[in-house]
Length: 376
Image (cartoon, rainbow, N blue to C red; front, side):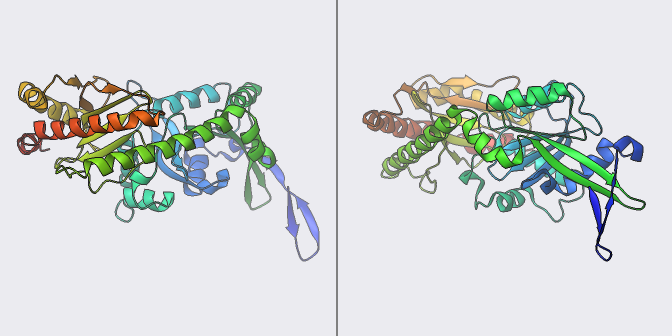
C-alpha cells in the first residue's frame, strides 16, 4: 500500500507491520476497532454483546456477537497475527451454542451489553433493534431463525487449516467469511485495511447463489411456506374472531409456525402451534427476559391446579418443563394434519379454535392468583 503525496505527485510505500510489533492486543485493540466500527466487516451489523459467555454448561466466550439486517446472529471471532488452527472449530461451537437463542434472550443479551457499557441511559434495546432492523414491531421479523447463524473470522493471517475448512463449509452452505486485517505504518501514522478474501467479494453474490442449488430451492420453498402460513393464520383468525372469544382480535397473521397472545402475566401466553403435520394449542411460559427459576415457579403454580385445569379443558394435557431450557409449556395433545394440503385446513382450524377457547376457559380464572404468587 502507498501513501499519496498529492503536492509532488509521489507515492510513498508504506511498511507492513504486525500486531505484535506494535504491541496491539486482540481484545483491547482489534476487538474495539470492530465493535466501534462494525461496518469495516463489509456490511451493516449491530453489535449486541462482546465477550459473551452466556452459554449453558460452559464458560467459553465468543469475542463479538452481532445481528445483521435480516435478523441473523453473526458470530465474530478475532485473532491478531495468526488465526491458529482451531478458529473454525471454535466459531462453529459458538454458532451451535447460539442456535437456541430466542427473541427474548437476544433482547436481554443486548440490554445487558448496553447496561454493562453505560449505554442504557441513551439506548433502549428494543427500540434500537427496531431501528436497525427497520421494522415497527419485533413480531414482524424472525430473529435467529433455524440454521441462519453466520460466522465471520478476522485475522492478519489465516492458517491453511482454517482456509481449507472455511472453503469446505462454504460448499455446504455454511455462511462463513474470512477477513484479513492488513496493517501498515509510516513514520507517524498507522493504517489498517480490512480485506475479505473468502469468499472473494467480487464473486460473493454469485457464489452464494450457485455453491449449492439447495439454497435456492430452500429459499423458494421457504417463501411458499411463509405464504401458506400467512394464509392459514388469516383463516384461523377470521374464524376465531367470529366467536364470542375475541382475545386474538388484535393479533395479525405471521410467517411463523405459531401465534402468541399474552395473558395478563408478561411472559406467559396462549399459543397456536402448527408443524407440517400437526396442530395444537398451549400455554407458553417463556419468562420474557426472566430467569429459569421464575419460569419454574410459574409452571409449578399451574401444576398445583392440574386437576382443575384438565377437568375444565375436558382432557389430559401435556405438561413439559425441561430442566436445561428456560421456559415451559402446557399443551393439548393436538391433531395430525397435512399443513400443505389446504383441504385439511378447515378441520384443523375448527380444532384449534375449539381447543383454544377450552384452554382459555380452563385457566383464565386462575391467572390473577398465579400472577400474584409469582411476582418478582
